[in-house]
Length: 361
Ligand SMILES: Nc1ncnc2c1ncn2[C@@H]1O[C@H](COP(=O)(O)OP(=O)(O)OP(=O)(O)O)[C@@H](O)[C@H]1O
Ligand SMILES: [Mg+2]
Image (tube, rainbow, N blue to C red; front, side, top):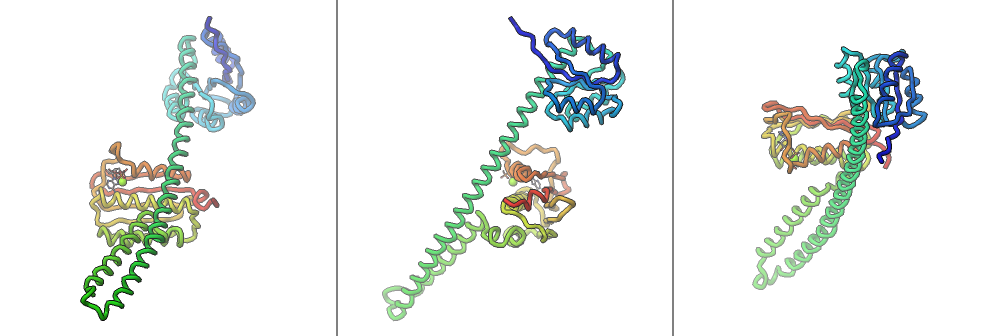
């Protein structure tokens, strides 16, 4: 035999007649048994929501201490974990739709509610809300996982860069010294070993040293850990300009910020990735990099004069650059936004709260 589900329902309604009618309709809903708590104002509803758990809230928008959409927004802000069905007047569907847009599960015109309709609305509201909460939790989990993967990758790159620079670099330096010794000893015995050959070997070693340094720096520039974010960005943009023949204008006014290691890495990688996008996708001749404080945020903006792309273009499933940048920004409680259209260049902006950037780790 099916047991009837018990629901704790909060009815927020100041009009006694409406409250009575809705209470009767609720009593006629046979799928649930309601333990009904009645509040007559927003403040009373919030106090009730704090004092005990509810499964669903029926919220009239016209209350003595709050009116219209504001009623829902204020309630939802304080009790985001509760599914809310908004009750509107007969001609008031637009405010109901706005409430849905702001997170209400549905709206019902209160003088026209039938038990079957109410029952279905409550069931869907609870179910949808449960799914939304599960989705939010799973998104938060994915975000933590992605932050962890990025952290591990970053550590690994730093380790390989150190090994390349310290170990391989040292060995190449030692090799060069040994070749130098042979060169000296061979001075008088040119028939045995050709001085030209030794010169070639020396050149090869020099080029190898340069390659090893470049590969190590591409993995993780030592300057980022030794001198910090802004010198590392200066170094990178200079290299970038020379390598790709794109003029980079820097407008950096963030000297006072003491970036922690995590935010320095995130911002450096965002700048690196979006500048690589300029080379790969924009066909630009010039770009501007701005880093500045705006209120309580540090804002990093990369703009180019290239051909841009449609602003609603969905990136291909194999595109991970923007996704990774967004995750890095989200990992610092920040946001990434893009402004672009065909022929109008591409502007990527990341806004990060200073509190997360300079937070001691
Ligand atoms: N500066 C830019 N100018 C024009 N289009 C751009 C620019 N930056 C990004 N795009 C567009 O956005 C898409 C997504 O960029 P994203 O960095 O996510 O992926 P990707 O560069 O294609 O691949 P990857 O995963 O290697 O970074 C690009 O394919 C391109 O169409
Ligand atoms: Mg990319």
